[in-house]
Length: 242
Image 1 (cartoon, one colour):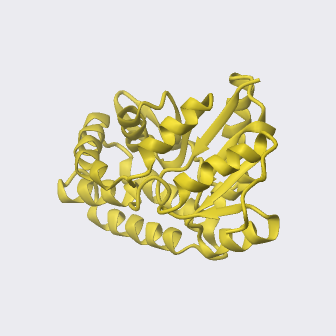
Image 2: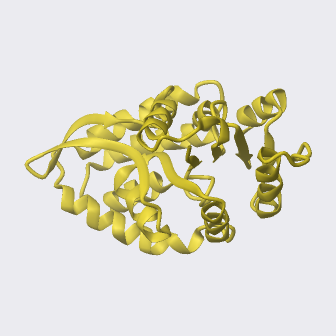
């Protein structure tokens, strides 16, 4: 069976929260309502802080984004997203492309699964050569957003559903699959794969990683730890506790 490598985006491959950059630019261009935009940015801030109400903050972000984009022409958002990523792509962590090459050399099918807007996620995936990706998706009618959320990976239970879908679609073994992320929404898929890796985890995820024996890494040591983790799947010594 195939093996998946499921990667988070915001805070894992880049230090940025891309939805924040997108909303700010939409506001600057007058594409969306400024008051709603500020509410959305406040919700993103609560999400980034984390804490016990993490998933509540995620729902608030999605609700604000739905309100923000209702009636907005899709091409306006797509053009804005392209300009945002053109500036933000230089802030990708330096380990990202070598990590992708490492995973692909080991035969993993890499999937980018993010709670962020699909308009941003697809640009990152294309830039990195990742064919499989999922993000938050709003319904569209007559080339305008309707305000209905079709998929919200950041919600509680959102990423596990996507993981199971991808595993079924690509006939992949979750026991032999890899996942890396930094937040509680990522914890839900780290718990389902045989090779979990908590990247610069939030305090809540760090506590969970300790209790479950998951390896923890940062931007400086991930390329050294990953081969050891993969060797453990093949019967090697495994990763020492971080």
